[in-house]
Length: 425
Image (cartoon, rainbow, N blue to C red):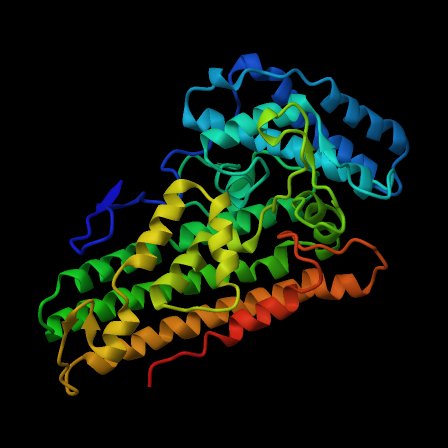
């Protein structure tokens, strides 16, 4: 563990592991034996769903009803027997997969014109109970599918996308595997950037005068952020070469969607047996790019505000508490941009020698801004390839991104990119 204590007022101690946002221990691969039925269903469903969605496979309807029956007959286990956090993390992943399968399979399979509008109690009750333990909504999140859903295929060596596999998914194709693993590796690659941000804010919070030594340290840490973000960008670029866009768009995308869209879920989704909801339908987002912690931290650190900021804030309700704590800490900490543009931190004002290393620090800050824009522009390209162009080729009445947005993802992404042109002159 890396503990970084801030001396400035208003910020708690920030906790980072050697993997940044990720737990130092690998995710649990299986639940205790008493939960064997959950594990068996999680292993069987991808095979069934792949056959159901295969246009050339026989017995589509019989496989569909078999999959439904597996979920209908599933025993409702007592989640209080799951005492370790890694057990609870795995359980909420499996139950989230079951819930999303139950809701979306009728529509994606073509058996029904609409998704299911309720979740049966054998899934909804334990899912809700676990979500209460983690103080988040009872729906799949980025963290479930990315952070707690992988295993390393080799016992040693650096973790990278080529020696990893996912533990569980919805279908049997590489599109799903590499989609999840891409964002996992991006989080790993961004760990050094987060650590550098925290170190810079520690320096800014403790300084009483400016020296070339301090400016040199700030530049060094900013350059680390640039290098780390370049690794994030390279990882995201792998999407173009490793993920089949048709497989992703026609299968993986659907099961990652939540039920916040009122046109499709006019009364929300009912969680049967969950007394807290009083039989009222609920509207929840599913996994979304807004839940990606690295860019939230970068925006907070560089003081980038865009029209999607409120989406980022709302998405924190779906994120693990340790990730939210780090984001909030950085967001509330001393701003490097304020220091460079106004020469102040809080109520402290500084004079900066124009002949010092100040200009090189500004240049490094601007490189950070450019790198963020590069990542967001690449993300826009990915969205155009895997969503926008694919949407034009179909006449589907339900068009959703994984974040649950209807048709406006292109405008939103363009708006975010355009707000990154805030380099310091």
